[in-house]
Length: 204
Length: 177
Image (tube, rainbow over the protein chains, first blue to last red):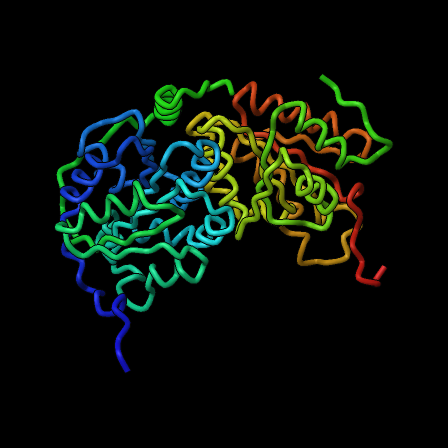
């Protein structure tokens, strides 16, 4: 019996998250970014501030639902939910909703360090049995991609920003201690700036 | 703005009030009491019906829709309110509107004791999260109540919930009544 490739890569989480996110965002081609709370938000801000990033300091499990709503409301814009393995696991059922609504402009990238990095590096569920790519396919998201090396960033960017969605990629990132990079935390200010950047009135 | 009623067909009144306010999506875990409204939404080609796996997803989706310029609401049974508690803090922190339509159980003549704890806690739980509650116990008043809650949500950037009493939607009995 052969081991499915997605099983073989567990523990292969070696990519530097900050370098990957920085290079990826340089290639985002106007995509709107919905980072999950905590590290994914810090990664985006560290790569260079943009009003097209909807920073988050809370609402664990809501990155994918928020990105889904945004993608449905803005069908001409590509939307990327950029989040961690623990964050997406908390709202994992939303992948079924993504598959059902099927917006072609929505992509999801999971930065998977197989741990709860923000809270003390407790081991996460994707380090053992749970295979996020198989989960996504099971929910009906057929377009999936696994990235285990920074060298594949061009392929990853093409998959997320140019290939038809809905799609989900997993990037196996290392557990790392990165310098703090904390953006604005006033939610109303973040939301107004974001809406201003995409031409939506806050009184809509 | 008040909405004329259609002889107690509160679902049609809600749909009219939604259309008048450009509310064009409903995220839901269905409830028996929501059946007619959800069917009206489903066949209306100006509306999007979003079926969820759990109600808190709906809070994120309507927030994302609003950030992108589309008005939407979340519709659920009172038990689903318990699933939403932490998520309710998300739109309120973003100062985004949140409109919830809740059909009550565990309240008026409930025969199922399993529905009672969350049904009785629905309003205090919502209010403790800062949601302004609009309970309504007469079918003819649902439309105008919904309209008021929707206007307060979208024009006043508040979290609001219309609580449709079990007196309106009925106490399901499974033959035990």
